[in-house]
Length: 151
Image (tube, rainbow, N blue to C red):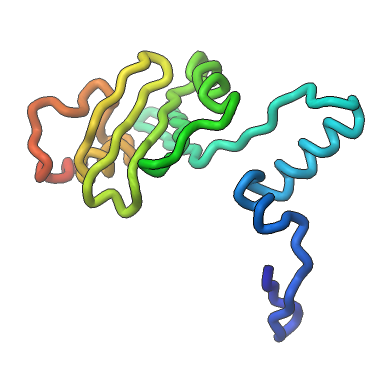
């Protein structure tokens, strides 16, 4: 990792190896996981991270949270990841978005609460991420070139 120190860029020693960077999403994930095993002699908790937390204050001051885990088309869930997302869906809107950025070919959105999937165009995805469209409104007879809503 390269960091700015004063006016110079310097190489900083990494806490995670390249292989660990593919396994642990952050330094904190690795640290907490290793610490848990050291303190308990075995893994007693599951440590995970969520790709995106969308927060929006709506009209009238109400707020909304959407938790979205992102997966590439070829990627699968970790051992407990889907279970954790399903538990979180009891409290928050929780989805998995499967597709490859920049999502020109659209994406699939999986709702962990209803266990329902919807294939969406890039425009529908954009509206959904901006809280302009609800999950149950996706795919209501619109073609892939459906324009963005004017909100």
